[in-house]
Image 1 (cartoon, rainbow, N blue to C red):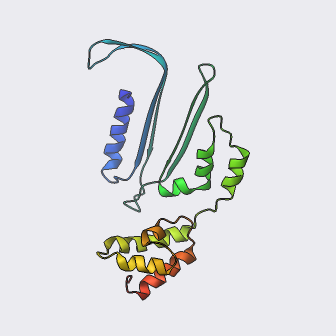
Image 2: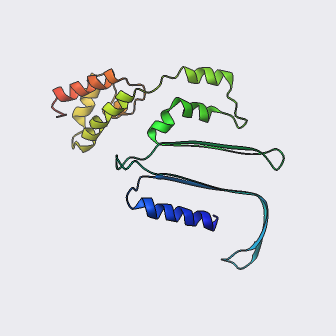
Length: 193
């Protein structure tokens, strides 16, 4: 890794890492070109062929909501690197970033940037996740995690049409009404305050 890039990363971590440990740091180095240098660890000369590219991204966490990891959606595409070469990469970090329709389309792209028409049609039919359902599941998941006996939670989930409570929590097609139904049943069973 480039020493300047490493120094910058260390500086950013030192400045922001003390107050917020939930940040996303990405770094990339690509090589296409020629380089002749001495390797400091072996003190032997090295010859490298390639194109060198350093990339660094730092996304600080949300200081208003400690403990949350920021959502990152990133795409880099560089064409005609040394006559016809291509550098293409995609990155999605965070539960909201990976569930966005844009992320789905981003990861369905081919290297040339196009999406097969049949794939695009299928992707457009995927319903967007219900944000209320996702937010509503959080307190239920926390109560389930703290519970010493998980069997009553599984019984409530089964009565609501799910194989287990874990299957309910990991179901990505739930609506707010589905979560409310399970939440109400958990309250009736004295499993939630």
